[in-house]
Image 1 (cartoon, rainbow, N blue to C red):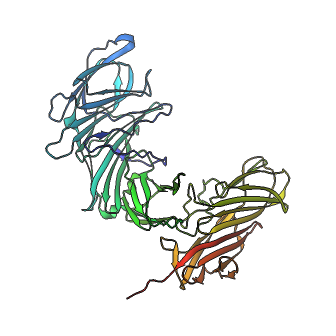
Image 2: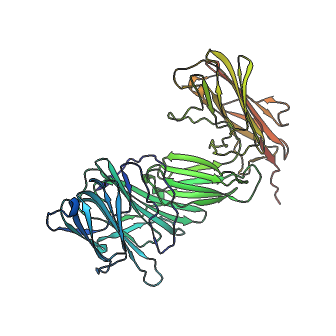
Image 3: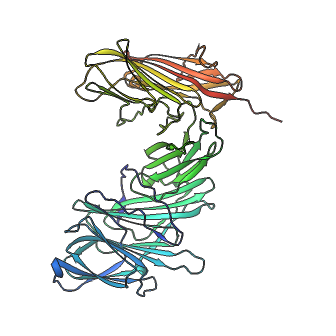
Length: 551
């Protein structure tokens, strides 16, 4: 195949949906950035040249002869010609269901050609699909190409599980030439899928190809993908990974704070580099779903969405650009307590509090779930952000997305107290920070910290009553970078009326949960080594339940 594995990018991918089983899916077509053409992959061909005299207006005659799997001329095809240079660079021309032999007048230049052939099923079998891709077609004279489906070779990608059922597959190719990228694809819902490269090699590394195959299992999905970069498109591809070659991703769906025990969260799990047909999975609230994936496809994106109980937007969580090792198991739990601030520790993360000149912009994710996943539309009943300067109230913002606000500040250096609070359908979160600040010449991060509490709760957000429990305590943000001068944690079991100090040992506290139906509240008071402070309170952070009885 003359291809070598590619180091993938981390762009997000569209999520096309399938049509009927007998049809070839071509829905991933439209990339329209400058210098980029979006079309569909080319067909197998033998090339001959005839004459060197240009046609009208500087064009050449391109004659395409289409032959099916039986070697006979066929009209059951779709052919796309994508211009990579010349006056039409970045555009594509489609020919489909025309006579088996068709002639086009085409300007001189470099092209990418792909052709798809459909073969009717024999009996109850699915339709066959043959995809021929010619990444390099240099037209400088009248040319005839014979596109022969018989040169295609099978694409056979399957998981090592007998209970897996094939759903859909996608083949993709990108070719870059002199700054112009042609993109073509074929998607099918039939296992009878074949592909072939046509024509000469391109320049080194100019072709990026990938193949994705999706299979369903009880409460799970197998997402098998392979990514290459080289000088040629694919000619067949056989991959039968063993269980140890795959990584496992487990998604646990918490029960929403509204208490609704029915319904499901929707998981879209797709490769980061390039589009993919994907296969969404509905995970019932309080249940789990499992994905088996091929690590060599590159990084992967997980999007978990919960429909809104009203007419508002769904609440979506993103886990993007993650790598997985063969044989590993990763667990993501969504929508369980303790909800609270979460600050992304990655080096390229956008700061949650910036001062630019006299403007303070605050984007603290105040209601991240217990695993730290940040919701796009967190459920809340009230939200307030207040800012004091040298002890005097400067401004208040109400009703906006929790932890989000913008303020205009006096230029001089001053002491500030910033408080963000939100009330959820169950419980509330308040964080108060103190720091000093003055006008800045450029965008400058403000020294905010956060404390994360990990309570190890069930998917309904509860803990067993009257039970010894450990809660992990993790510091994020400015205090993690600068160091912690002091940190104390307190616990309340009466809704925050009284608080009891909880000794912090090895990054965790120990407590005994209260009677069934009662709540546990948590508070952290922190000072970093630069003197900036945080007081963070979670009232009714989680609820206790009666212990299960045995008979």
